[in-house]
Length: 282
Image 1 (cartoon, rainbow, N blue to C red):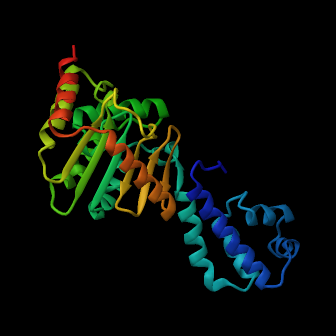
Image 2: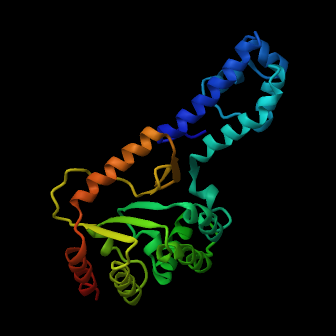
Image 3: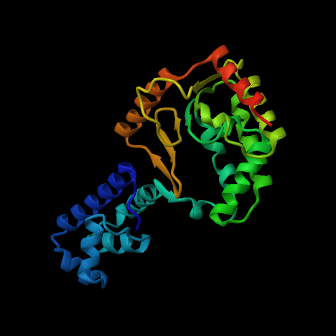
């Protein structure tokens, strides 16, 4: 089991491990007693209780049965699956291609009312044109060695972005100025993408800020992250997607976003930076 870079994921695993330990103690069993009843090596029970190993659904069923807690099986399995979903390797999420992953986010996007996105390497997904998204996703598929359905995935990504033009949603979007210069696709695709940024800026639901390269830094750059209301944060690492749900951590990301927002420029100043990036295209 990989060690999660997010304490939310590890905290969830430790909380489940604590619940299993309490069940064992309430049943008056030692770790060796439980292992013997389950037909396990004693070390397995210890590793599960110390959140060093992730139990399978069958492990949880056996644990609960031995402890006389069959009525808690469904809840324990749900908690275990939730903990595991907090740190998921991209190869696992994208093993059949990229389109399904894009489509899987639609319910989350439709129920979220306030989006906050900080982007360090690429244009935020909700603002991507189809050509830009196709070029980007094709590169991702190649690097991660998964099936390349980038054309379908790009179409799905643009389709899910319909929420940006609907009522009931607001978008606070920040990007580093360098993002405007990282090229995905040909010159025409990049020009169209940057032009699209200019076209969405007047939307009442959109606040688009660009952090200039020369801005005095009161907050160091972070990994790309997306906040969905005040409920969860998706953090994009090279190898995995981390989902943060622990309230204290979500609050930390909100504070970081607020600090980063202070360094950004908006309105005409942001448009000037975008126009400069367009003019820099060959």
